Amino acid sequence: MSNLEEEVLETLKRNKFSKMIVSEIAVDPELRYFLLQSIIPNVATKSDIRDLRNEIYKNRHEIISYADERIFWPR
Image (cartoon, rainbow, N blue to C red; front, side, top):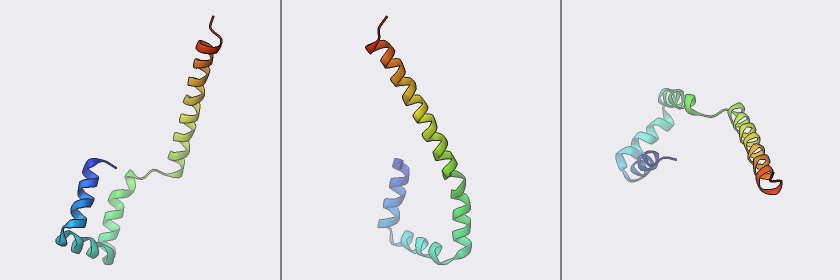
């Protein structure tokens, strides 16, 4: 979570007016829909996470192979 996000959350927790806004979002279906539609493009899907894991796995093995060649089997 970025500093900006943390600051927004802290402000929402402290500010009484902000709490009222958040509670209104919770009960108003149109506001919830609008909020979710604005957030959804930034959410990672299962496929995104799977692709990221595969990329990390591949890079990890490339690094291990490189280290093995340089450290354990020097030429």
